[in-house]
Image (cartoon, rainbow, N blue to C red; front, side):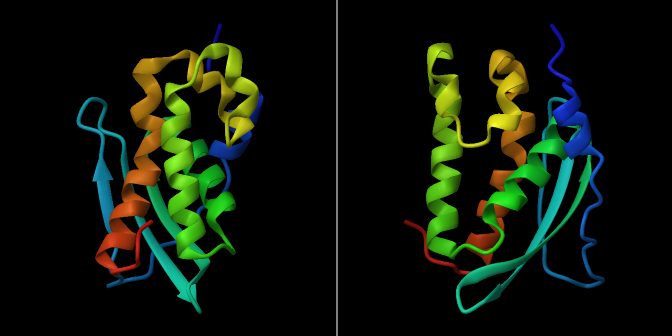
Length: 138
């Protein structure tokens, strides 16, 4: 069974909102495979109103970054931290509970534990950006 589903391919091929020149970004690398992501966020009144990324890597990283970006856009920093925690914790659930995952489009990844890092790299970069920006955590 392949983890590369049509849904993942669709999300992986979506265009990224480009990072601006000389912009402060958070950059993360998966040392196991070389996947990379750079992330920058903009806020308006503590609400995430723009997410810019540059990803270089596998389908899982690209799809995950777009899907996570969709979930975070338009929510408060506080809500973003809660979502990130829920998403990270979801990788420890039992296979019988897959109907409860926060991003159903990524369900195929939950069957391949050695690819979790690919799916989690965007939240690592986003969390680091929020920390750099001194946004409060939960």
